[in-house]
Image (cartoon, rainbow, N blue to C red; front, side, top):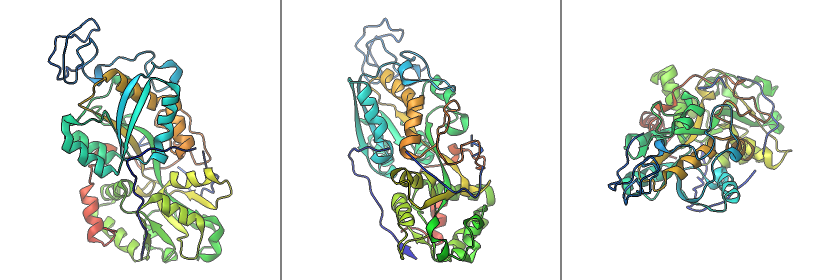
Length: 410
């Protein structure tokens, strides 16, 4: 078993751009598918007040909570609303991001280019680090928005009581299965677990055709044709979510057996999804030929080089094809609720969704925004129905299981 180094995001900024030609052996993404703030002044929330409140309420007659911030222009809705129809963004907003700059910074750059009066302060680090920081800072945090790579971290900040509800038009724009049931976080882009492989290396495998790749995730652990040529990244929130979903769908005993059997395949284990996909694509003698991971890592490589040999396929109806989301929550300590609410509207508007598809190979979470790309669209894949709000931050049961079976820590 070979362990690969982990990439760790620094607290910095960057950016990028679209996508994938692929041989698909399996198809099917059946989607998983006003309160008062702590201001103590005498300003009202009807726009007429002129008080000197402090805390979340600014005392200038604006809303004291993000959920009360009416759209500055057109509200967002499931049919898809353009940035040009939304209100202007002006002011400063601070984002703690558990996603890396290459995944989301282009969206921030586009917004700053469109609105000259907008400044987005970005703080990048691992999801776990960001959650711990938010919990330590509590309502004194400088962060307005937490941008997470998975629902588990969003659930954790909700459980810690440090985030507030989102406006109703945003919640009504995103399907229930992609957001918190009471509106404390929402997904803004989707991704799906997949199987990627190097199509040029078939003769180095026991397979006669890539069409023989199984559509049942269990076989990737039990079929000895995968021994020594398969890989995964077990330290990601998405992988732990996959394991938790398998526990819920198949039972703990079956899941433990799957992990144990998979480890018997002598897999290469990575600390970085990007590195894993890059090495599958590179095709060196010591590189894995097949990988279990999020499809967008492969999509980004082919976007950069249309001749890249990495390809993607999917299992059907099981945890191996789990559809999940990256998303946002807003903290209790928001100085400008109107700005934060309008910023969130931009992420679920048409351009925000399209940048996530084009730049990062992800899926839209808004029904009115069409998926554009060579992967099967959300309506074509066969992902299991699963309540993403069930994920907790550490996905502790999944993490313990992986440690017990020797897959973690790396």
